[in-house]
Length: 502
Image (cartoon, rainbow, N blue to C red; front, side, top):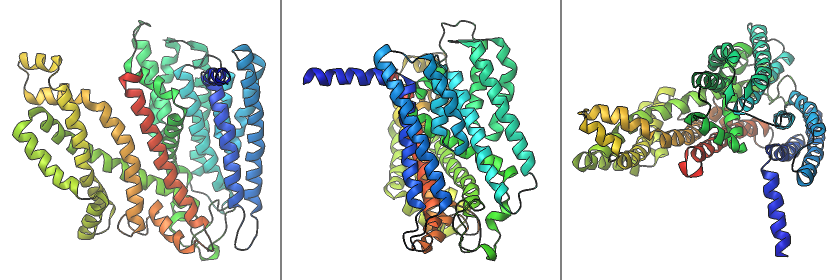
């Protein structure tokens, strides 16, 4: 019995050592889960009616899940029998990639992963760069079913198509000219437009451009570039990469929506389309004023990300400075700063935010101020603990011996070496800030009611839970998705930066 369990563990360990098996297993599981969710949402429990569009979509995910399951079984059989995956099986990956057209990017990722045996970090970044741009094209293309589109719609779609094709060409060049840690100088001209991709929010393409430049500058292949090694460890955690993908997708969609979405559809009343069920024209239905809920959620992502990011950066700066000074000087300075912050820390963050908004009025700026003040003690404590562990190390003592001033030591030597825990805390904190933003907006104390923000959309939908539940379900899912994405990304980043897990 024990021998059987031991063999089973050995087999599982062997299977998990193949990235192809892990991504394929997750793909068919996610496909079948989405099938069940969409199928349940297609049935109106009150009237018993079925939304045939949703039923068809759920059927597509069922078929794709079954196909992916069969591919997974084939991969499993070959790994256990040959300790490798046959080239004929890898060709199947080319047939899985087109499922991205149906919105099943899990199968597309599994397909890209399957077709190439040796996958470098550059190749993986190409995969997610392409999927980010292509998914935005698919989401934007839904506007074609509306009565009219934005004036810049065709321009935006043309740019997205050109960018996607450029990423595909980059993948081809990366597959041909990247061998192990060596990057051919022929890729350098591609690095500049890749770095400029940050303009459309494609973080994967931006990082890829930086890696190409960094590796071409380091001629010695044996020398490891630390931040690239951190990225490699991050990509070992599939869930953290998916979280990063969702975050990147929402950031990029928020930017590209300026061209491909019409803001008037999100804010203008349309009394001829009040409370319509989900359809191709209105994928998430319409609210009590006839506004497209899908378009409102797209524009709401922009507000949530902006507020969440600023409400995280501000306390990082303030709390970081206070924590660094407290940890470096200690004694009276530490006592005064930390006791004042303890008073602030004793007040629940959401209660403090409500009090500030109630005193100064509900607005986006006041919301950012309220969330920022409540987060300062948390970041100050994190920086203080890190600084106290660094302040007595040899390089700090050497800087003091060389006559460096305290300001230089703190801001040039100590704080740069304290960034790892701050970055991890920030990625987790942005998700919490987005959740707090939506919570306060739901209570009427956050973003102004007329602005499409997820909390505001959810507040309207909560009044129609019995008759039109989709009005609350879709913004609720958007909030859950972004918070989970930041949490998974933060957890993966924490593990990647942990020196014990190298």
